[in-house]
Amino acid sequence: MVGKGAKGMLNGAVPSEATKRDQNLKRGNWGNQIEFVLTSVGYAVGLGNVWRFPYLCYRNGGGAFMFPYFIMLIFCGIPLFFMELSFGQFASQGCLGVWRISPMFKGVGYGMMVVSTYIGIYYNVVICIAFYYFFSSMTHVLPWAYCSNPWNTPDCAGVLDASNLTNGSRPAALSGNLSHLLNHSLQRTSPSEEYWRLYVLKLSDDIGNFGEVRLPLLGCLGVSWVVVFLCLIRGVKSSGKVVYFTATFPYVVLTILFVRGVTLEGAFTGIMYYLTPQWDKILEAKVWGDAASQIFYSLGCAWGGLITMASYNKFHNNCYRDSIIISITNCATSVYAGFVIFSILGFMANHLGVDVSRVADHGPGLAFVAYPEALTLLPISPLWSLLFFFMLILLGLGTQFCLLETLVTAIVDEVGNEWILQKKTYVTLGVAVAGFLLGIPLTSQAGIYWLLLMDNYAASFSLVVISCIMCVSIMYIYGHRNYFQDIQMMLGFPPPIFFQICWRFVSPAIIFRLKNATKPSRDWGPALLEHRTGRYAPTIPPSPEDGLEVQPLHPDKAQIPMVGSNGSSRLQDSRI
Image (cartoon, rainbow, N blue to C red):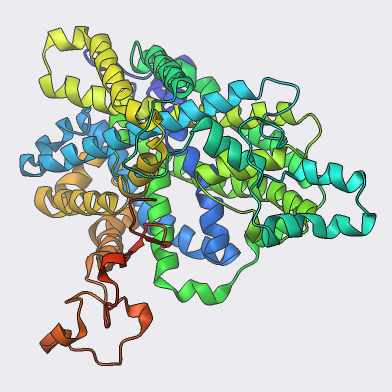
């Protein structure tokens, strides 16, 4: 009797259900439920948890940002996560096939494919750069530690170079002010920044000036695509085994870096800078918008990957339980990574004698400039650098596996015949080769401009639109009663009342509230003040901040301010 009950739990069903033989022999299933959970954790926990969340947290009020972040998680993130898992698991179809539920909305599935394609192209380029830094760290002295390299400019001033000067002929009284003079008065650049811009990228001066393809990066891009293909060569059967390592080892590295970081002088200052709440910012709409966008980006909602991964579950798997576990694990990892990042940055700021805000950064600036420079201050710095970039590689690969599998599954399910099911490996190879070819321009000297452009706009407001349409189509077109009955048939119990309310009212309301981002800004209208009549007539005198061209003395030299997705303004002069 005990053996029979244990066998009945192998499919992840609730304990009250009898043993069900619900394996999908045609498409295949996960080897066990641990593989699905680890794959989903690897998919959700990616580079954004390490290089985006900590920066958003300190920029938007520190500990106060946690409040809107967890509100968005509870009322929007977890409900949508559960909806996508149950959606894919019930139909056992990818992001295209599930829209048999309402063929009119199949375009939503194509939208998910487009998002996954965009992200998959540039995401592997980021992984290839991490590979490059990983290989470059296999040395006694990190190449970005000093300013004595051929690519360095006279403006370069490294932390270790400054220390050597201080310990040499400089008076001891100057040691506290040396870095300040070098970095602020003379506007010096760090060796890690020059290594990044002048050696790794050989950055061009314009987004339209592609220059040459950087062959070392191209080779690393090939390596990363080969690794992804080999891990997915047998679909979920092979990737499910790989995630035992790729999804768990990053936590080992994070813990090692955390223990090392909190023992450094100044680490507490960095952590307090990360966590200290600024409650006045909690009333700003931008803070709530950043919290919502981070939830969408981090959990992977509306990318199509969650639907795809769940489609390989057995029909009676308890995806409700899985959605809670994976969502909380993902967000806890983001918070944990913040401690790892800011403990090291606090140490670096203390060493330089500057505020933490002077060394804090996000995105590639954190991963390939600020953090590597901080690592040069540690004993046995190549070891810490190897661990850090190996962690970035594993975090990126966990997401990239699911992005590629999303596209392959969508193609295979759409064709649906026996021939393509047998040739799925060749489909995977074809998609991988196409991804490699499309990523080649991003390895050119202007590639980082295009990468940042895609990162800012490929998966931003489009995720909100896709999630909104998916919610409305399932709850109000297909019908909430039908969907609740489907879940009860699959799980043995209907979705909890909280999720029913969120799916029908709360989550769509929150998403619709974000539609303000699509409204015209207050300075929209004719450029010249004399043309602003009728509904465009200004109610208050214009100010220079309004961006109105009141007296265009030099129209040929006018520069149009551009606002990025992260809220930072810049000039539209063909440079990011």
